[in-house]
Length: 225
Length: 79
Image (cartoon, rainbow over all chains, first blue to last red; front, side, top):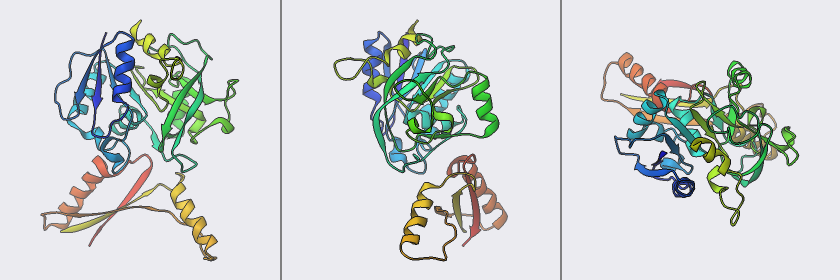
């Protein structure tokens, strides 16, 4: 399976994603933001980091870059797109995903491992997880407080477009285990066609038990199979 | 022509930075403080003499890049 990782000035998780993809047998290519051509891709990953120094709003400048025009075109023709952390912020700014990512409720940059519950696995990114699986992934962000309007929130809940919610070790979802203030504890969302996933947690950091755990592998393996 | 854009978070959107400024001012003894919202100020100089056209251009710039209309609102003024 062919994957492409988009690299912006300020991306800092691009190599982690590339390592994860290569380890899991994707044929991966890195593409610079100024490029106008995308290699043939089954999956495009927009990695985490601080593209363009988070100027204006996180992801706002990257969303207008040359390569994003191609990513939007690919997304609209059904290519799988995964935006992680700053990548999620960029997808929001392009309009491919709806809503907004506000400053964390605590006003602090949060870097820690959190528990997530797999709420919906009926999509190409999560089918190797079981529904209600509890996984442990890392988050590292300042603007991860997901917000959306009521009617869209209902649409997300009703149409199984929320793959992950923040929870505690036992899987209980409430405000105490909501790290950043996201509405309904949302950690990631899909578009209506379910080919675009944006998520704040970093699955690429959880692919090796030697340095963390292997809870992120399920996501990449879902895409492969 | 020079125009200014003031961008603030919509009334219903939590403004944590504004809250912190508000609390600090209250701690500093500004007892009459009722409410505070913070935002961004952007000055734009255009090679355009027609005020209406300049306004339209900046409006377009706001919608396309400067403002996230889901959470923010903006005001354009001539300076």
